[in-house]
Image (cartoon, rainbow, N blue to C red; front, side):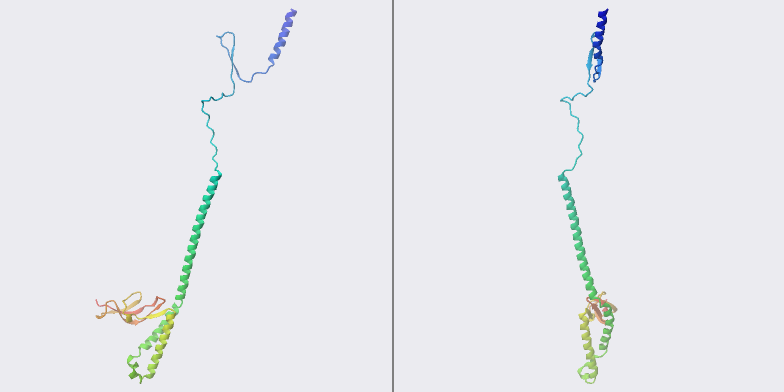
Length: 237
């Protein structure tokens, strides 16, 4: 009896350390085959995934964010600067063209102001010139001949003085751009922009539509019609 008790105590002492050992971390699946007999077959499975085989395809890597390189940034900056240069050049050329147009327009306006500054004054002056012309035409040419001039010496001197005054006046007006014209002297064709037809009459020896009589002479100021000439026009048909 004493020997059995000692053997039991020793066996318990040997089993006690085995119970305090830590449990194995991987999951244990015990598969017991009843057909294999009393022996138990144990298989151990790891929780980590198995390593990929050599033939298996590697998983696709995630696409990296495409960041522009330094060369692309410089190229973009150069293109931007080129566009700015083209835009500034276009604005510069337009500004130069506008300035030149302004110069030409201002020059024309100044010249027109100079040429036609006397327009109002000239309109009032032509009436006096007409009166002077009428005074000269009222004296018959017979009384100005040498034979009759001895009896009308004062009239001849007056007529000559008026004629000289008219010549000097017309010469002075011509220097300032005011000119008088008589269409009947040159036998001009009727022009509604220059002439004002007062009447029409047949003239067999003259061309149809020509001016044969001047009732009132016309005036031009620097090439512009200041007053149209009042004329008679030939109408044969």
